[in-house]
Image (cartoon, rainbow, N blue to C red; front, side, top):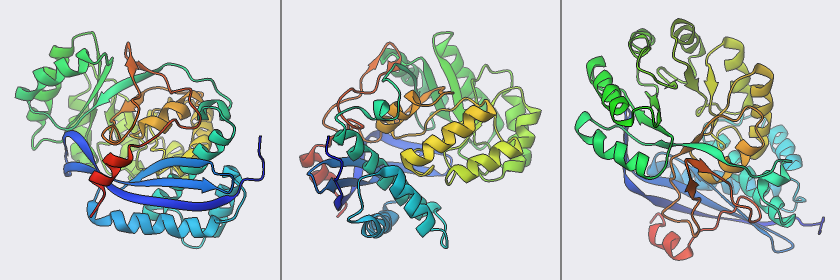
Length: 361
C-alpha cells in the first residue's frame, strides 16, 4: 500500500440538492438542501469525497470559500487525517473552529478520511477498526399536520422503517399533542416515535410542553430550547420522564463535553460535520462511552453509517437522506436496518450530470 500520498488538490462544487418534498420546521422551510461537494485528490491519484451543508443558500459561497481556505493550509501535507486534524486545530486556535469554520473543517476532514480509507482499499468502518453491521434507522421528516399524517405513516411503514421522527413547534401545545397522538395511533406498536422542536421554545414553554408529552410514548424529545442553553436543557431533562436529545448543534467535542458536565441531555446525536468530521466524531464517541450516553447521528447518512459502527454506544441512525438526489448508488434499507456499503471509503459517489444540473448559479 502506498504511504507517501500527499494532498495535491481540493475541488469544491456548491449545489442545491433536490429533496423529495420541502422540509418544514419551526424555523422555516428548506426547499432544496444547500451543500458543498468536496473532492480531495492526492499525489497518487486517490480521490476522497464528502460534502458539507449550510442551511441557507445565501451562505453557500462563504462555506465553499472557507473550505478552500483550509485546503490551502493543508496542501502538500501527507494524507494522514489525524495529523492534519491536529495541525488544523492548532493553527485555528486564535479564531476557534465554530460555525462556518467548524462546518468547513468537518467537511474537509470527512473527505480526507474517505481518501485515506480508499487508499487502504477498505470501507471507512474497517479503517476505524470496526466491521460494517446493520444499524437501526429512523425516518426523519419535517412538520406535518393531522390531516397529512396518514400518508406519512403509510410512507414510513412501507419503506420498512422502525422509527419515525416528526417536527413539532406548532403555535399551540394542543396542536403539538394532536399531531403526536395521530402519529402514535397510526404507527401503533410497529414503529418508534421521536419528536423535534428545533430549539423553538423558551425555557418555560419548553418545560411545559415536554411535561405534557411525557405520557405520549415518545422515544425522545429533541432540542426543545436553544441548543447551547445547557442549563435549560438540564432542567427539562431532570423534570421529564421522556429522554431529552440534543447534539446536532455541538460545535466540536468541547461543546459535548460541556453538555455532559451540565447534565443537559439523556441521549446525544452529533452532526458529523459540526462535530469536526470523523476525527471529532471519534472524540465524541469516546466522551459518550465514558458518560454512558447512547449516541445517534444527524443527517449525513453515508458517513454516519460507518461512524456508528465504530461508536460503542451507537443508538439510532437518522435517515434524512439529503444527498439521495445526487448520488450514484443508494444506501438501501433492509428490514428497518441500514448497513454501510463495503466498497472503499465512505462509498459515496455522485452523478456528475446531476451535480451540473443542480449546481448553484
